[in-house]
Image (cartoon, rainbow, N blue to C red; front, top):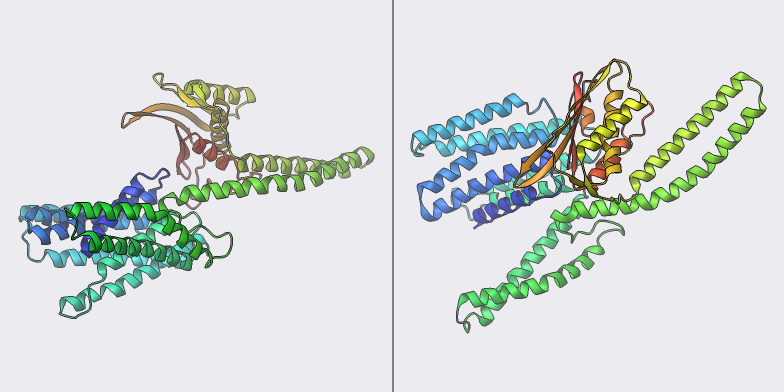
Length: 504
C-alpha cells in the first residue's frame, strides 16, 4: 500500500509541476525525477500483484533513470557548474543506457540486478548529499542556504527512517517506513523549491499537520458512511459516492476551521497555511505587489519633497556664487538629485501594477521602431545592428508602447556591454507549440557577457553591475512580460556575449 501511495504522490507532484504556470529549470528537473520515481514504484507494486515481466521492466527502467535525473536536479538546485559536473551526469546517463541494454539482452532475469540497482542509486544519492553539504559550507547565509540546510536535515531523517526496512526484512515487528519517509521528503522538497519566501520549519510542520488532519477527516467520514450505510446499500459504489459527496461538501468548512486554529500559532501577517501549495506563487505575487504599491507611493512622497528643496537650494546658491569650484560642486548636487529622482520614478514604475492596453500589433514593426530609435539617438562607434525578422509572423495582441520599452531596454543593455564595439542582432521567429503560436524576439550582443554568479540575480530589483545603474530596468521588463502572459529568458557566456529571449 505504501508503495502505491508513493507512486501516486510522485505522479501528482510531477504533473503539478509540469502544468505549473510559472516554470523554472529546478521545477522541471524535480518533476522529471518524481516521474522516474513514479515509474519505479508503479513497476514494483504491480509486479508484486500480477508477477508480470512487463512490470519488472517498468520497475528497472524507472530505477535506472533516477541517478542521472537526481544528479541533474542536484546541479540545477545548487546552481553550481562544477559539482555535480556535466561529465558526471553524462557518465550516469551512459551507465543507465548500458544497464538497460544489458537487461534487455538478458531478458531482465539477471539475479544480481537488485544489488546493482541499490548500489547505483545509493552512490548517486551519496554523491548528491556530499554536493549539498559542500554547497551549504560555501553558500552565504540567506534563503538559499536555509533551504539547502532544511533539505540536508530532511534527507538524513529519511535515511534513518528507511533503516526500518532492513529490520523488517529480517523478521522484526518494526514496519517498513522508507516509502512513507520518501513521500514526505519529496513533498518537503516541493515546498522548498516552490516558495518564493522560504517558510520557517515550524510553519512547514503546521502545513503538514493540516494536510494530515484533512486526510484523517476524509478517512473517518468514509469509514463512518461505509459502516452506517454499507450493509443497507444496493452496491458498494453507492456508498463510495455518498462518502465522496460528503467529503467534498464539508472539506471547505473543515479547512476554514483548521485555518483559524493555525492562525493562533502564527504571528499576524504570516502566510496562510491553508492555501494550496500549487497556488502559493500567485498569492505571494499578489501580496508582494500590494506591499510594494503601498510602500512606493509614501516613499516617493517623502523623498521627492526634500529632493526638490535640495535642488532648488543648489540652483540658487549656484547663481549667487562666483567661485568656479563651488559651481562645479553645486552642479554635482543638482545632477545627483536628478539621478535620484529618476531612480524613484523607476521604482514607482516597478511597484505599481502594470495595466496593459493590448491590441493586435505587428511585432516586426515594433522591432523596426526600436532600431530606428537607436540609430536616431546615435550608435557608438564600431557597433553594428543586424536584423533577421521573420516576415511570416502573425499579429500578436500586446501593448505596443510597453513592448517597445522592453525591447529598447534590452538593446541598450547590449550596447552598454560592448564599449569596444560589436554586433547587436534582432531576430524574430514563430514557434508552433501544441497548435498555439509563440513569437520569440531574440536580442543578442557580442559584449562582455554576464558572470555565472550574477545570472540568478539578474532580474532581482536593485541588483546591478553598472556603476550608475538602478537595477530596476530588467525587473520592470520582466513584470511587463508577465502581465502579457509572456516571459524573458537569457543565455550568456562571459567574454562572448548575451542573448535575451522575449516570448509572447
